[in-house]
Structures are given as structure tokens and as C-alpha cells.
Length: 132
Image (cartoon, rainbow, N blue to C red; front, side, top):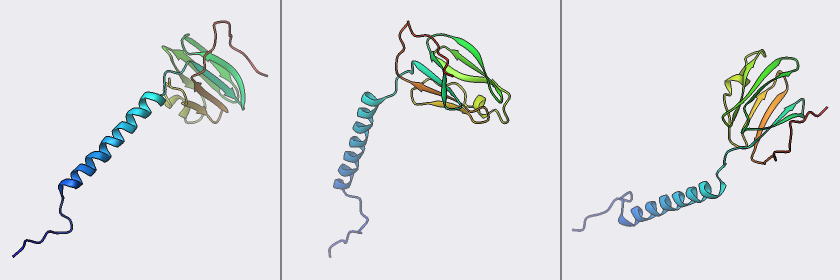
């Protein structure tokens, strides 16, 4: 009499298919990380009430205060930026911590402030700008 196989039996071809899918996923991930990985941001644009109030290079350490309905202390140090002090309710912007990669942002809703990191480069001739 012949032995019957269950419909859920794991076969050698199944293992080959699973290995192929895993290899394809790893290759796709490697391609993405190699060609599309976010490098270090070099420019921080600081918006208040939708207007750019400052543009900073992250390779220069600086600390300044943004005044509005509330007070935010913005610190750039070692290629990273953070809101280090704030008197706004909850201080969620302070809890966002340090950021350094393009596409990241810090937002202080009560003071209507947003810090966006971008990979664009400023030249040495560029200075901080205030838009009114």
C-alpha cells in the first residue's frame, strides 16, 4: 500500500522558493540602502509661522533663541540639531531629541516652529538669513 502525503507537507521545492524570495528581498534592500540611503544632512531650514527665519549649516556649532508665543532654544552641535529648551506646554519639541539626517524634522506646534533637515549644500559665502 502506498503512503499518502498530507497537503501541508514541506517539500524541497518549497525550501528553494523560500530561499529565492529571501535572497531577492535582501538584494532589493541592499540596492535601496546603497543607492537611496540618506546621508548626513548639511542644511537646517527653520520655519516660524510658515516663513523661513534661518538657514543653518550643521557643520558649525551655534545656539540661538526663537521668540514667538513661546521661547525655543535651538542648538546645533556636532552635525546635529535639536530644540534643547522650550517653555511651551508639554515641550514635545524638546523630547524630539537630536536629528541629523535629511528628511527629518522637529516641530513645536504651540510656537509654530518647524526645523527641516535637507541634504542641499550652502557655500561658505552663504550667511544666516532672516525673512520678514
